Amino acid sequence: MKKTAIILGATGLTGSILLEKLLRDDTYDKIKLFSRSSVGISSPKIEEYIINMFQLENHAETFKADVVFCCIGTTKSKTPNKDVYKKIDYGIPVAAAKLAKQNEIKTFIVISALGASESSSVFYNKTKGEMQRDVILQKIENTYILQPSLITGNRNEFRFGEKLAEAFMKVFGFLIPAKYKMIKAETIAEAMRILSKDGYSEKIITSEKIKKL
Image (cartoon, rainbow, N blue to C red; front, side, top):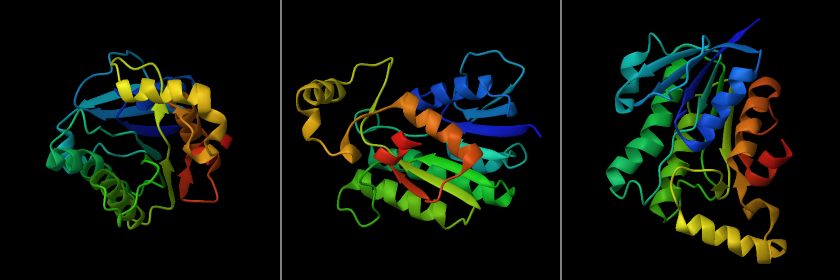
């Protein structure tokens, strides 16, 4: 039986790669994209909903599928305002999880970050931790939270910190524990696709386990 997927964040690095993978995957015959701008791809599989992502709860009637992939996320440099940052990194994934529960969607897969903890004194880690907590509270049957380390890939923007980390890894990578090594967006997207089919024994999946998947 063919499946329907929802992707949140398909215009981002990991989300765009995941979309390409699902378009090639015969398991899915419909892919619903909820975002603030179009991905610019034409396919009979794609249904696009260009919406205000801060009002996701207003779209319960169309938020129906077999699996939700949540690739939403911003950065401190892109979103320096902490209130807006929290609306994105906490508000949107939690709203999506609540809709998934309401509409009896059985699988919810979301990207968080390594170091996420609701008890962290670091605002950004704390925000991710609170998101994880409230997604899990929805008790969706198959909930998977990915905690990648620094994500690399072909971005449309230059990130000095990422380039610096890449240079460091080339020289000192052998000293870094597997859990903290950089991870490709391609790897994360493929792990999400596999999770949607095969599942996993743990809800929270750290970077080195994502690579094994």
